[in-house]
Image 1 (tube, one colour):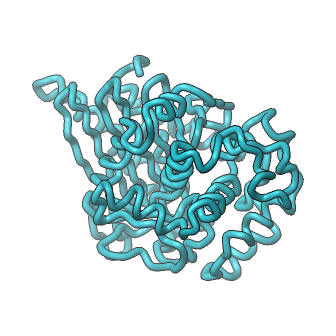
Image 2: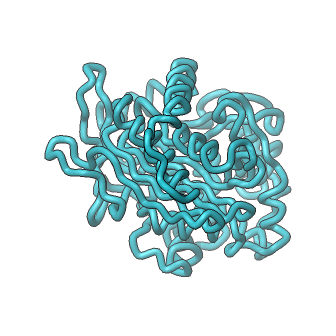
Length: 377
């Protein structure tokens, strides 16, 4: 995360934290009070930033809340309102899916978290020092291909429909120096998840898409959730996603970039309700053995100031906020989303903004936590 983005995010954090008292009339009932406060800070994002539209889903069974709220525009140019049933790109929330498939293979005895990468891909640099766990928890030190300026970023600008092969982007990551000696620090890197995906394909003999469909999507009956391998299309009824230009105009990025650049790390799409269903199953432990699920939710968590001011820690293909909320976030051109669930609080929060720029969806997530639980989460 760049310094200017941290400053901008902090400014918006202060902004939305100041809008708790905007509602002059407090509805009766504690659940309505919470909803009124969440509505106020959500509306403040629309009124005080350049985010075109927001979809918010909060399900807190202990408080009796099941609240799906939309604000702003889904389609700026045609002035169409946001729709909470539409599909949207979920970006790096895809990582939790890919990593869960890999952890299922750990449960099946086909790979171990302590295995060295050299066991499977001996030609990769420093593969004898990198464990599978380091790929999952972002401690490998491998360069993030999407931070490459001369090749990746220039291609995104000059040839946005380029179809990237996964190995191309892995090789691009290894063409740079490591951020640090493997295992000594943490740096978020899409390259890690691409390598995990290639390992899944090597171990199963199937495509990543097939494994995700068979292990995650079909068992949960997710009819509006899919993993894409390439193409610019976002199928079905979907939200528009916008990039904010230097002159403050909006470019429709919904079907502008070939999604192959995100692949295992960010190519899936879903809806708020299906993402709720998925993240609840993810955190509840539906996909893994009890012992591995416990390990996933209690061990290998690391953080630094770049991960939401130290409020987020990264684990085995999953993020933790506070002590009990687990999930992930996803940002890619035109889309910003956040999904978290707490078994302790019996609460799920799903957020979607139709731009990656200006104000990340994670800021609103943190504000919702403050409204619902104060510091007790």
